[in-house]
Structure formats: C-alpha cells, structure tokens
Image (cartoon, rainbow, N blue to C red; front, top):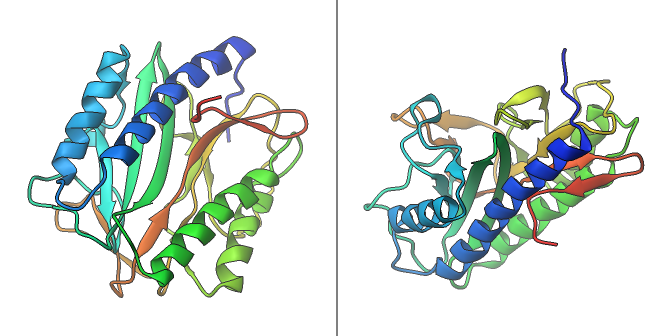
Length: 250
C-alpha cells in the first residue's frame, strides 16, 4: 500500500481548501430549517465554494450531479440534492462537502438537526460526533488504523448503535479518495500512521442494525431497517504527537 505523505506546504494548501469547506458548513447550518429543499442547500454550497475560487469536489465525481451529498434521516451517505426533498421539523440531515483549491481537497461531513429533534436522534448525533473525536484522539505518529476503527467501534457497541461497515474514511490529498481505506471498526489493520499523512476520518452510525441498501439511483445508501443514521467527518493531518484538523476555522 502506497500512502502519500505531504510536505508542510502541501498541508497548508489542504488547510486552505478545508477552511472553505468549514465556511460552507457554517453557512449551511444557518440555512437548514423546515421547508427548505436539499436542492436549495446545494445551490448555497455551490455559490460559497465557487466564490472562494475553489471547485466543488463532488460535482461530476464519478458522475455525481451535485455539489454536496445531502442525506436525510435513514439515508446514510451520498444523497443527491433534489427540489422534491423538503426538510421537515424533526428530521436530521447529513451534509458532506468537498472543495478543491490549488489542486488539493478538503472533505468534511456533519449531521444537523432540523428544528427540534427527538431524544433518540439527539443521542445518535451526540454519540457519532463523540466517536469522531474519540477516533481522532488515537491519532499520532506511530498509531495504527486499528486504533482509529477500534475507538469508533467501542462507542457504537457500548451504546448499541449500528456501524456502517461498507463505507469508511480514506486518505485525502490531490484526490478525494487516496490510500488508505479506514474502517470504522476493528479489522486488525496494522497500517501505521506517520507524520505528514492526511486522512479523512468519518464514523457513520445508526440507531438500528448494521445492514444497508443502495438506492435505485446507485448513489444514496440507506439503513435497511429504516433507522436514522448520522455521519461526522474531518480531514486531518497526522503530526508527531497528534493531529491537525484541516476542515475547521481556527
């Protein structure tokens, strides 16, 4: 497996792309409300990303037709924005955003409540975000991908949450998907993280069982049992003693 390490300059360029992603998340969070369509959110994201002289990474990727992935309730990932998908009070929506600037990619996902949500959905969002930061806490020069996946799995198992096993994190750089693939559970992966590696860590958990199905459009991925799902993701750079989040605003 060939895993690319980045120079300090390349990491700086990735941070610039990541900040555009963070700004876009910030603005979409403000826009999310009952009555708005996911297509409207997509237009907002496109305008923000392009106004910062960046390119929407997802648009056209393997034929994907939109700027963001917008996945509502039981849809886990890869939801195509649509005029027909109108957010309602009590929904949750996972927004995945990629921006490419100067040849480097920033990639981050977050799950947001639409108005007031019930306690079980709140628990799901809280625990999935907690799983992201638990996974990040394992990262440093010399840690392994098994450490990352294990931290996510421990939170899921302790709280009886399903784990999306077919999808996971990945390397990021000049391409959105680079080596390595990062499982959200233990598979015995002893791949060692090293200073300068840049990866996206992204737990996807659900209130029900692990099984998923792919939509007829061959993009959207749903929980098979119809239970709500959440998705949280940051792009990070591995450092000597930890990590640097690149998809946030300092």
